[in-house]
Length: 176
Length: 207
Image 1 (cartoon, rainbow over the protein chains, first blue to last red):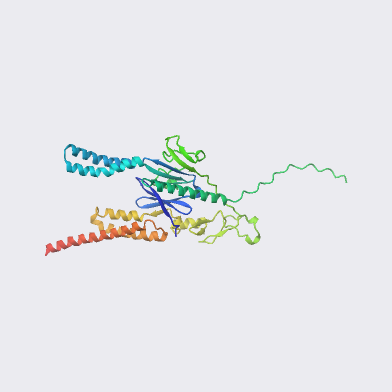
Image 2: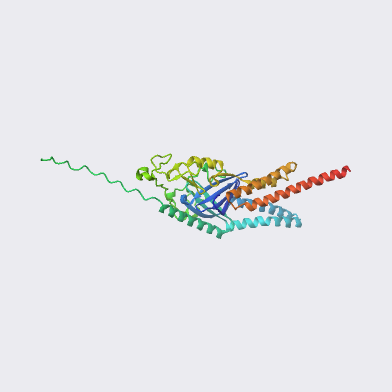
């Protein structure tokens, strides 16, 4: 039976989806491709750094911009040709794309990256900024606790070896 | 492990801390807790730096214990055994023992069991049953001439996925698999209905 896990967030690119889960002692990363899931872990006592930044997601912006641009351009052409019914329906179809595009440019995407010794975990939050902050705090707190416990559990350093003594004075010749 | 990843620019050749914006390698020693600026992309990011301790395992030596505790490790004869393998029973020192899913294994048994998939926590590559079932469901209308087969496969993958989740004790994604199972069953029923209608129409025309 695997350890119970809690879903934290996801990252996505053209190749597939990455889902990040919280375990008691680590983050579990599921990389989903079409037929396979590759599972890796970043253990809290191996974490080197946790970062948080906000950026415009280029792929998402281009996708939304293109969707809105294509429908919008068709709508404008229809307006020029006074095809009102077609123009309205096309502009209505363009509006969700354009609204999402503008909202994304204003809000941006929050990224959390956890760097381990051998691998990393990354999550993105487009809308739920408060949730992103919560997750960031939760991860940093857990890493702090785990690393403090690991430091405390270290065996005490071996006692320093006794320094080599200089050779003693030559024994005096026994008078008897 | 990092080089095997498919999704990854991020993971291939991973060598430690990087700028999260431009992925330029940053020396861990140069990273500070607080707001950072990347020298390469000039982007800002917040960072918390950690300095994990190098794990040092205390290995009791046979020479340091009394004759009563003098069971040696099967691989390191000078080290005192601290556990025995749950599979083969071999004595192991703290260097050899591997904790996995509540049991302790020696390295060869761990390799063997995780390759076999007997240790759920040790499996690194799993079948994406949910993705396969979804693909079967979505592809069936486009390959209508073999759709009874693809939809049946979708049902099979959904059931396998649900069983797999149960074995692993995972709760996430189970609802999705049940939904895919229901959708695939409905699709199968719809396909059989269409086939029945077509045959019915032919039969009616024949009469």
